[in-house]
Length: 408
Image: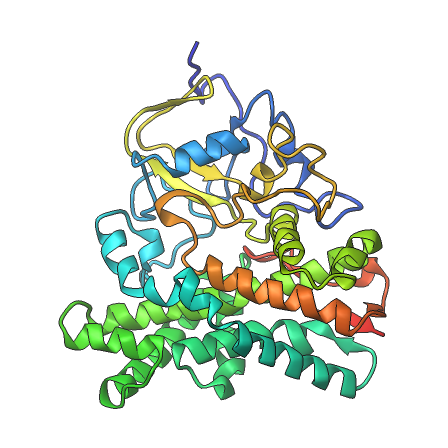
């Protein structure tokens, strides 16, 4: 029988986000979010504003809803489960927070540079960046902060090259993007950071309109000249690609390294192989195991939807906790065990359906090069502090570490 939620008789006392990671294991999702995952993969949670959207923790249920056109990504729709207060002045909305057909129209403008064949052609350039940064790391002082010396520069250099953004400005855009994704930043701070990045990308777009090059922003500028995009739309797409292109991968590099250092038997698999297939499989398992986007994919129902014995009514919010879905034992046996030999390709770290992450081929390539190179070139790499003293990013929607002191 289909069940509905009656706020007059039922309670939703589980607060959702921010939640602490599981005690004793900073790599595991919060135990409160995983409770009853198999028996009750949909349940109500309470947000900061008192609203009670559905929390979806089941893997199969997440994929079903992410592929359902009856759920919307538009945060302006009533019932949308916002993770933080929205700025009353408004803010620019990227195409990832739009529904089709507008979402599809804008997404098509930037799909070509992220096509698998074109991304694979970037491997030599990415390898050169990784090797150069490792050279610098080994020539520098010990201990070193792997975040500052390696994890952040790798994806920043790659996305700057791809977009046509000067890497000399990386301090500026890294600072602004970090403010935007911080959950405890005031709405005014996030809005100001977003506006600063929009202004910066708009100025770059002006440069590309005057002096186009062979980069993604120049391609967007061509769309502006053809009347397919406004300059503002092009700049905002640049903001999205710049933030997504370095922030998430940087956190995966650092957090993945820490997880491997804490699992030396798994680290040995990568350290002792030059087989790209083994490395690629390991990347999928690390993405499943860590799944650094911990804010959940948020939607609102446009129509009544029956799923897993529950009725989600039109106008009710839905949070799809992908980090929890990737620990569903019905799909991944012993899900809390890091196993680089596991076939984890079905994970939902990049989402599913029409809003699946556009840049996943590039992220996979960068992680394959990093994980396939760093531990072979620095086989004695080890943590230079206690795990308990590593500063984790519990205050952001993208999980990771602020610093990772290492030595060798």
